[in-house]
Length: 383
Image (cartoon, rainbow, N blue to C red; front, side, top):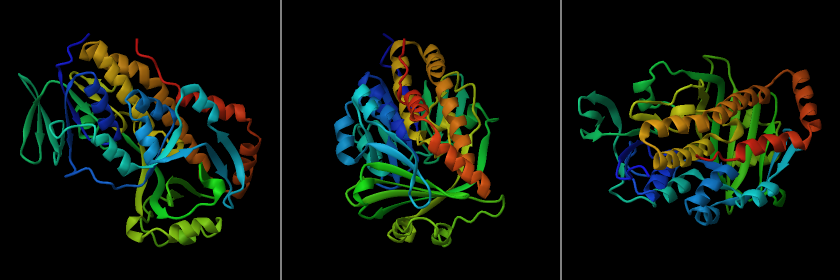
């Protein structure tokens, strides 16, 4: 057993960073999590914790808590703008196989539930990283609040624009999709058919998805392509962009306060072949930011957390980092590339191409979707 008294400093209290902290805490490590926000708030939109993520939380003892705070999802529907199905996937077989269910939950609630597992001595808010210095005695974390922390092991869980990553891999490259995603949470009663389903509707250059995350609360997202230099992150055009969709889409938009709708350009991180250097290692979006087209950004961060914690519990840090990357790199790269491709296919605008796409989806055997889902849900084993 490796020395669990090793102090590990985690930069970023997002879902991946907090999950890692919980997993390391359970193994007896001394941990510090540094978060730039002044407090952990119930903000943000929704998230679907797929089977793979829930397997991790089951191991960490959080399965029942998260199920009670969210909504159980039994299937996924890909539809036309009028919400007629093109393809569907049911998830019961994976529930039976792995003993967990898929949960849609408010992202802010998830983050708060994770933060509750840590003490105030372990979770430090208001600590925005300025830079990492390397000295004769090791590493030094300098924060914008004036604090300096001597560190022996650093995990960068600070997102797609990671300062930790830039400090060790300055050549890393963000790729832009030329797509904008709006997200919101509406107080709305979905019809019975949609109570336990994630639905995504594809149109011509636009798509819209929604899922129930709590009683009378629906998380939705809307994505639109744009020409470089002509993007508009405002909300005013949303209703017009989706006027040809089912009326329920317009109702969800109307039921969401304008100041509760958040827009962002979609991008990912060009796949990297190395996630660590010396005593610094990357996790989640800092290592492999991906587009949200497969709903696996957070899920893969959560998997990272479990695998890295298990590796650190069995091996010295250098070997642990190598084994962690070897366990995770191939799967993550596949998902990054597949997610990028789906984003392109979903945003076809040529009517003939859209027609062919939709008909191809309708005739694709369920076994194809099942095989892909199996790949995503299966967790690696640390040896």
